[in-house]
Image (cartoon, rainbow, N blue to C red; front, side):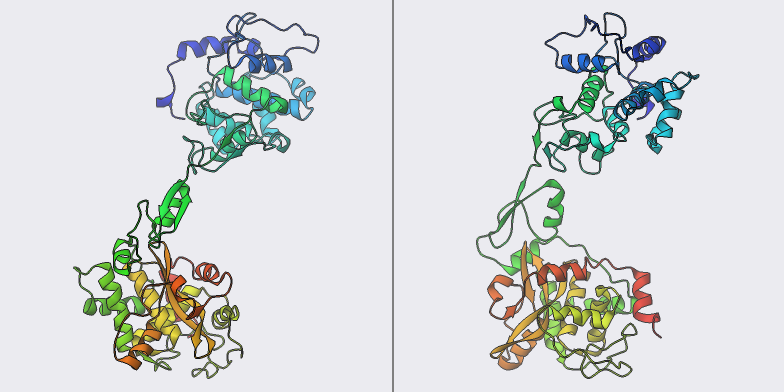
Length: 500
């Protein structure tokens, strides 16, 4: 809260503070006569809250006949109420009542709250700067969130992001959402609007505290996050929240339908681009030099992806890389049965299905899998010869440089009448998971002499006969390779210095 946002209530606040002792003094145990407030009518929404809180003795009126329901509550008063409510809930009223009076009057309530660890750093700041100023609705719930766990029994369904003016990440978001879910507040309208920055009134405080101390009067509400319909290029649709939308958009989903038939060129040209260097200078320089030769600024995204793919198909050779080991100081064990010089331990004999992920871990131990892709891409672009790992890693890393979300993917690939372990590349474009396999494409070109892009941007659903992916392998692989957010210093250390 800043002073520029505070209502101009100076005169009122001064008069309010003068009678604060009377306002905030609890009723005695023998005082059973309920007051009648001229400014609280039975038709008022806060009627039951006001008389409920007065019945508990936690608040009384501003005079014998008035409650002043629309008057704002100061930070000092809110801390006083926090102390009294906590004492009420924990059978500590005698402790609070026995505390000596202080100057200023509210210091003993601050002392009580501090002794019970009820005041966060933000409230300490408010005590220093805004003790006599009104507290906002959001700040009050943040303050009262320190009350015991037994207060916070959830009875309502309120989705994250469902409160219209309290988005995910807003100040006091967790406290506000918990209060909604517990029925302590449900907003000021049918949409669940909260007005978090509005100073909180005595009537609102009375209603909130009544519901805190008496769970039988809590309110019911269901607030669901509005869903946004998004479309993939294969006709698939999905309903997502506002918070989820950006992640889907980054994978090519959009809020208008694609053309009826999946079109690789159209879909790639529609993709948003987030170009990313690896942070490994040696590889980044090789990629930049290659792109300067095969790409031009006036190319479409589709043309750039095709140029990179065709380069690998046309210029690379399947087999042991002549620079094998040059970029692999991190290896403690070899990924090959015939290890490169200096790499002593052969790969375990069986490589299929999930054991393909053991392949990564045998090679890398505790190193990030992004390093695996960078290492193989470096070997391929330097030596122009490699296994399927080299082709797929080089393609994925160069796609990231263009700005597309490609990753290497372990699969079982059809070879004759059986399946063999294989690494390809996958990319989600237009919301559709697609294969890109320059190594197999090179094999097909070698047989026919024609580059027909039979393994270029092919939806996975169309390739189930050629590639077998077990269970959750795609999701696992996406998680293993992360988001390819590289750390330059770390990459240089892992791929150059470490092990030398």
